[in-house]
Length: 132
Image 1 (tube, one colour):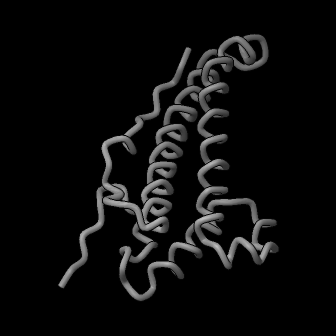
Image 2 (cartoon, helix red, strand yellow; image 1 turned 180 degrees about the horizontal axis):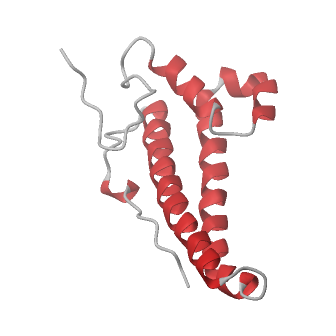
């Protein structure tokens, strides 16, 4: 019998309700935050707190990618050739999309850790859109 997981569910995390769900969620979340966070036992005791911190950490990275995208052309115009600036912008596009997908996956896991209703909520679908 297979267990349903919503689209965007991280492959490294067992489905909610299974025996290893919390352990695999904890391990996965620890990979997403700065390594120093591993020193704090409270984050291992309360995976929901770790999920919240990971969500804030990755959300800040999304914001930084958007800001970098918005300002790269002007900031780099005099020091990087045009083809280099375009490559930087493409990097922001790709990484921004990856970070948004990661943020959505964190939100799914956080929702499951909270024991809330279906984590497959359309509100979790926020595509990365570079803001100029």
